[in-house]
Image (cartoon, rainbow, N blue to C red; front, side, top):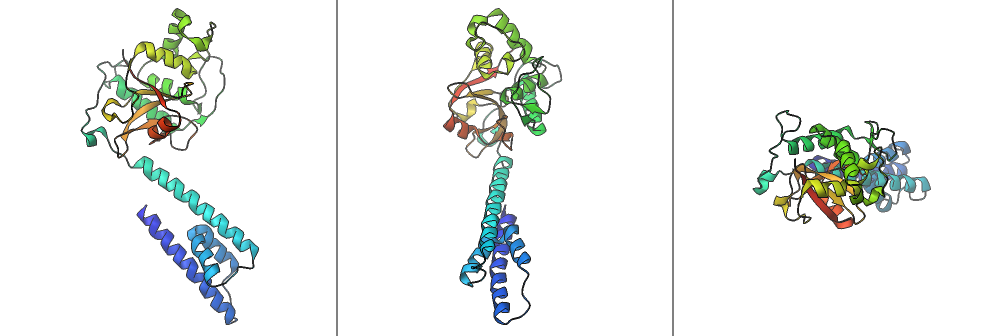
Length: 283
């Protein structure tokens, strides 16, 4: 980030002076700097210096296309800055240890791989985040979407699958035995989609998980592998990461079509949609 800042300062100072130099060459009727070079400097991060140079040196101000290219250059710089800021934010993180928080591990290992269930769920969610499936909501015969596609609920069942659980089978069985508890089903079970609906998962986890605080500032109560649901209409679901921001609030692992699938976004989602449920799966 510091190197980028240095680059931006240097390229904009260079572009500012370049416009001044070209103005002097113009006055002396000497060979000019090609306009293509001036424009490229703007597009490679020097648009602010170029714009200032146009004003200060009274140079190229009558050529409308220079104004267009400066605006394009500034937009490029803003987009690049946003992307790098987001990257830095999501790749600079803390752990529970940094805040004196003791991680809670499951005493169960469903798939008998030597890793507890909560950690397996976390790692499964992270693998899903790293594979970055395209956000696409559709109905599939058999229930499961292609590996290259997914929505928020697909992150959850794939995370559970990594721990040795078939969330689909568990939800289907619970709906079969207690269909009256699932208002989203409306009395008609559909095994091709029921396990991919947040409203159904809300009922299932209410019944089969430890219900925890919704207060995100109570940072010691949020553990890797926990499940969180957002929105009064239960519109989104995510897995809690083992990464935390500088306040100790954990990252989310989820799919809402965003660029970074493991991100510092719990505060934003709580502010915009509200945390309505927080669970720890118990077996």
